[in-house]
Length: 347
Image (cartoon, rainbow, N blue to C red; front, side):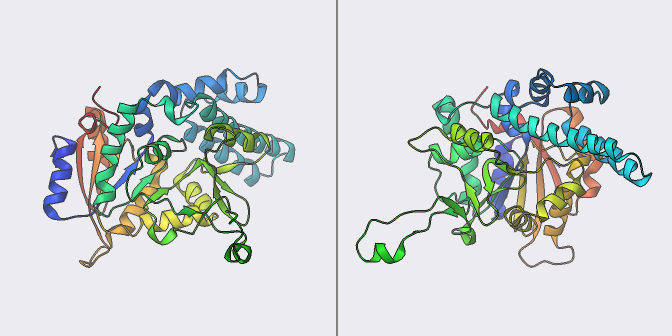
């Protein structure tokens, strides 16, 4: 079924009394600024770097789809290993893959708006208005984006009841109980895990795994959030960041991190309906489709159960693509015009 508008979708879900969950893809960020968050922008940035390995890689694999590039590198490496090729060549391919992932992260950071107040207030307000009904219905917001846009909007607009699972602990509980000033930890994940409703399925720029804790970088008096993240990157720290090629490889990466695994498991236990915005459901997203199908719990009529999914489309070709893959979903599939959502305000 094709819905005319995003408002029609939300009205239908309210009428049915369904919890509404939201899945955000790169289209959410591109709707804010395609010149920053498109694959073309990232590709052009990386291509401009004075790096012989990356230049050779990009000129050989002629695509701006980084997932495809990474998949082809992984496939080539698997073939080299299977046929017992020269170890030196295998190492070159591994290093090229690592360098590409690091450069992709550097591109996102370099092209990103430098701080939250670079987003015009009216656009931030409009985005909060788009996000709030999902949280207000008791639903969750899931995103596969690495950037700071969602984090910034939730923080700046103080969106009520949005909880990402992070919080602080008192580091000196004994001394604090005796009257000394409490010393607070950095933002650690798990403290508010039970009430979490914001999930970064593929990680994000401000999330770091220290080996013992999952921590979230923050704005402070020393610098803006992106500045603090840059200091960590310069120190050799790497954010939680899923950049594998195929869906299977992405899921393997997710399962090796307790934060990502928790987010993914939550996604497989959705109750109600899912609205997706800016998510293409391409061949590299098999793990997302699998999670959606797990949430449908075929044969069960008891919650938690995902009943339906509403997918945003920008063009006729998008609609045709969803129609062609609709059989892959166990839940009922509907589409709606992405432009009617006005995520960042009227164009």
